[in-house]
Image (cartoon, rainbow, N blue to C red):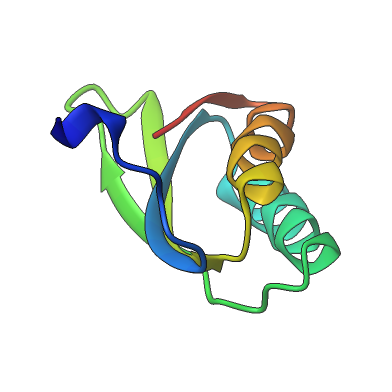
Length: 86
């Protein structure tokens, strides 16, 4: 079955960081989190919600292993102002 297939690492993965508040501190901290995982990919501004309360940053990274796949989104979600990581 397709759902039983194992991921083969490394794998490219697109992430979207949804946040509220100022972009600069979230961008700076997210860049530091990526750096702690040895990633230097550029975070790009994404869309804003229709009311302007929520905005996003996007990045495509290479995930080397399952541990990183689980830990990276958790670390990004812990940044103040971040509401979710998709």
